[in-house]
Length: 199
Image 1 (tube, rainbow, N blue to C red):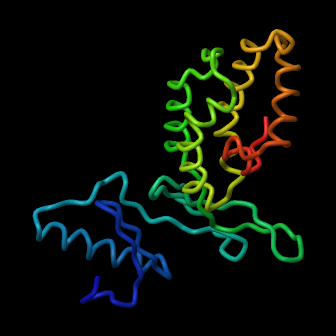
Image 2: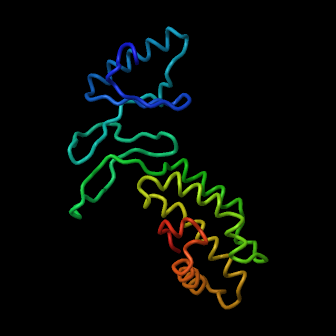
Image 3: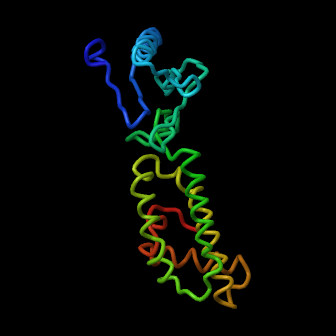
């Protein structure tokens, strides 16, 4: 890249690479050059992962087979955005990927929070919020609202915990109402509440 395409920016992390091209013709040319370089090193690009993606937004409106890609736990794709005048437009933005969201959900289920009725909410915060805060700090840097569905599972388990912990919140509706009020009064207990992912 430095010798033959110095004016083309790219990012690399381990074996994942994103190359920014201005036109489809340039993308095809660089792809061939990369494949040839890999072959010279007795390597090959992944046939399914290696693709040309059209970064569609309000200014680039062509139809194209590929309009999204994953990189470092984010999915880059067209998303609604709001400009400084409050008008909606389409931008090409990153948000937490489906794979990363699934991994977060799996981890939360493995915690089995709903079965810890011997713990107080402060205890649960001390046990798990450090991990939640790490997710929020990383994946919440871009398009925070994409994390709301991800953390709904954590909120559901906290509701189930409240149902088992307190008799007066045996019914799900009451437990949800109580937890929602607590999240608004003490958002610092869990980082996803500070993010806006309220039960």
